[in-house]
Length: 332
Image (cartoon, rainbow, N blue to C red; front, side, top):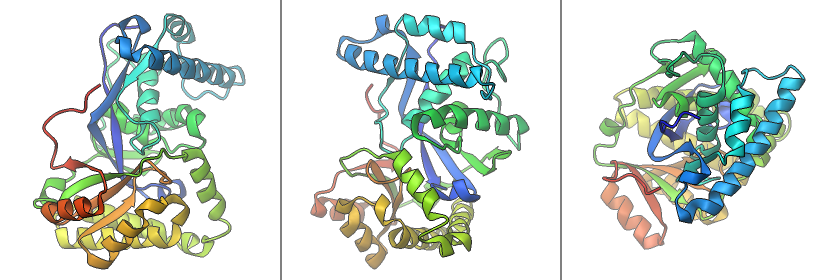
């Protein structure tokens, strides 16, 4: 493979988890403190050798699935299988500090890296990443191709996570073919507050939870979903985040948090129930799913970061502040 290291960040799906599968928009941004790149086992630090072998095994399984799709003429993105197979035999692995199963898109970052180095379409001789400025029609095709590859990790994928890692920019996803970069005025909304992540202490099971949601579209909770209530709430939250109306932004956050509390109980870990309910009761912060839920991180937005610090200290709950940005990147 090309020896030049190409970094792919994790992502934060700010809005659109689950609802993007039934037609809402999605808003996603890269989370650069957590990132990774493809490398060869000979370059792995001694402490990373075992993990490198594990990663190499997963990538070999991915290769097998991609070859099967190619054999049955279902593969959307033609791949340079010869180069990928050669590099895997030389110990190719994904070197990363992105925690698996925490809602930060670890599989999306791997997918983006594999696509960048080994997919044939949309790559010029310099393998440059296409600009997402405006409604770039090519990005819709790339999103579909990335979704198919990532789907081999955990079932159905919208393609949003790997596309954000691939383009390394905040994206507003309107549908599979209409995607554009956006400016997200989070610093304005959170001038005295913060965007934070609560650590539940256990990984997610994305495939299982996505399947539960898709089954429930036609069974339990079907009335609210078929009435497009979740999509409507999600789209409102996206519009308010992209605006400069901070009061409306936090109102819409609370409405989404309340909806998820009422309808997504299987996705909210039991240890977070008291904190989630306290946020709804006090209006000091709002919690929402970060990814599929069920474990990993829970995302939160607070009006007042000093008050948040006191409350989390009192609850003895670990959390990571994303905005305001921490001074240093997370170690690899």
